[in-house]
Image (cartoon, rainbow, N blue to C red; front, side):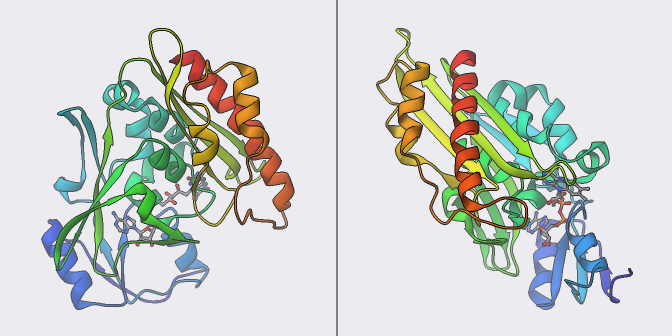
Length: 285
Ligand SMILES: Cc1cc2nc3c(=O)[nH]c(=O)nc-3n(C[C@H](O)[C@H](O)[C@H](O)COP(=O)(O)OP(=O)(O)OC[C@H]3O[C@@H](n4cnc5c(N)ncnc54)[C@H](O)[C@@H]3O)c2cc1C
């Protein structure tokens, strides 16, 4: 299949890119192209123009400053998975990025594309939620910051406006006593997650849990936080029993049932993978 005809723009700055988007309401941003090009070839999308942001220097690079990790929107999964800065400051993100697709996908796909596409089965939205990421966005009206918890609105729908570009992802660097894990149960054919669980826990010197987050992708229309289950772990010793008890009553609202798995099966997967992710995070803390 071939895509419909489209104009192609390759801006060299974020300002130029957002201006093109503002002037062309039917234009779409092109990053790694590993989701957009397939849907264009299937004619599920037919944008009048593509705005290729892959050569904009300001959207590249990984840096650490003032206790934060900053990742440009066009940084690839491969760069994230192999970055010493990401492995030190947000190992959960490196672990999730390293499990995406195959080598070709990891060399082309970008963090900005993954989060903006907001596929419910994508791996990075749950990691961004669990890590408390802030997403920096630029549009023709200026710049703004959106917390990951406000970014994912509905199935493949985000808080981005049509003329806005996700420019950078900011993550608070992991502190002492913090451990994390990303665990994925993937569809054997596509490799996409039927369920992915991202857990972060922090323990004090005595081993008590002082903070926990647990988020899932693949289970419902958007990545979702199991905030009640995670907060019930605070003050516990994070024993297997405490984790099982926190997850026993957990129910993900509006779990998806489809030809691959029923809603009930996904709920069970979330409980099993959530426990696995929390135990691994505890052992790493
Ligand atoms: C064979 C295969 C296997 C895959 N397996 C997995 C997997 O296991 N896990 C997983 O998470 N993903 C998987 N993917 C999807 C892959 O991760 C895509 O790369 C990702 O969904 C989109 O990132 P991209 O950079 O390729 O974005 P693109 O395809 O270029 O764009 C995707 C969408 O996001 C928009 N967009 C892109 N960047 C920005 C930005 N900075 N600001 C605003 N809008 C933007 C585009 O306009 C488009 O609507 C797979 C893809 C393939 C082809």
